[in-house]
Length: 286
Image (cartoon, rainbow, N blue to C red):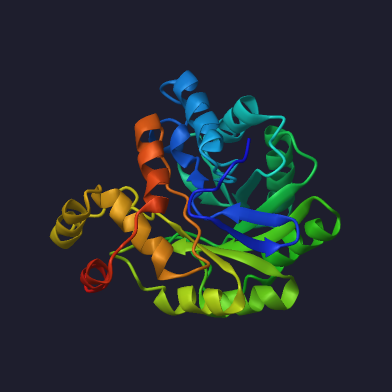
């Protein structure tokens, strides 16, 4: 059986080809990305359906749960299909109160990589993103020390490729001086375009740009213009917003997350939604 990838694929390295429409596994954990899922069987079914639909790019982290999501991925999909690539991230831990805590010391990062290896059941991680920080905890200056730790782990064969998350353009340049960077994962969507210049830079340099919260995250996108364009196209606003992102840059990869089979299928179908020029113009003006 020939398996096609929704939205096509992007090849970033000889051993790294990802479906442009991926799947973000964060929402498989419990409320607040903490604890077990409400419906474990449903979570397993969503992961298996994503792969059945041709998704070869799953985004995760061991601090989702913590460990819960990675263990679900392993239970649902291991032994992994030959073309499946799992992208994870390090740089945070979770407190007993579900708090998000910065964890960027060398030992923190070494432990996080080994935890990801164990809970995913792999000998090497396809891609590890250094989570420089969310808006309230971001590193304002150099990321050389933590990124250097990951570069050393890559040299040891525990990581195949490196990425960065929550970074500025200057921090991306700094990371590139230490080791090759294949992906940038930052906040970006139809209504939040502060990263426009970095999206364009990544396209120019052949680096994938992966928007987190492509549909707005915990505050879903709301726009009368988006609703109107979607209705005209016979699509949902969510599908229309995802299709706009795929069109925005040839190196954008999407990782919309859901714990619903219906929403998963709807998101994947967005990869086939063609946006006419007048629709693009209206969406661009939001």
